Length: 284
Image 1: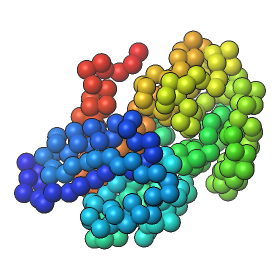
Image 2: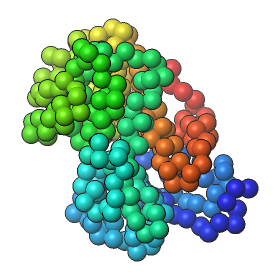
Image 3: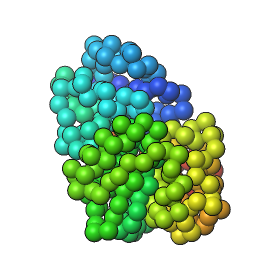
């Protein structure tokens, strides 16, 4: 088996909350499938403890780690190097320990865009993006790689300063961006060809901020929340006869990219997907 005699390596994910994370099961299934002597665990890290936690990960010589809400931007301050993807997104979700050097990457960019590419989505449309945090930054970076004449990105966020800052980032990447108040999202959603939820709304089964009456038939609705698999936003999208893109798809692809950065091996995506979806299979 590959890596059978290799020394044990530890990987992890840090965030707050973290109990909902499916990454440990997915990554451990991938390590097991390739016979790698690696383990992946989760650590709840409250925001005030981020620096201390990164220091601790250095002390134990962790092989690599993932970063989730709310640390994707703040963590950059404590890393030694940034990959081009992390610089472009202004956020990090994957860190690799290269002989003591902590290097940050952003695999959310590829993770977000691949499910849309597979569906041959036409990016020449209005995109409504809910949220302006670390994940939203990666989404803006991803959309900038697909920019076409006539495309427009509207960022709806409760913190208007953050929305405007992200719109400026998008503008610098060549996107036509504007910021609006979160409560005005339903004024834009009926004309949007793509609606993306990049907030944590839905994680605790909260009601969708956009109902089926404000979703265009035939549009695409993408919720990056992956637990529950079918959020209320996606339920509303079903009623509106829109196309659904599930959060687990982004989770799978970004996780596969992280696995490949850490190991240098092709990720066993089928094994990882099976672990995520279990015996129930893909949602219908």
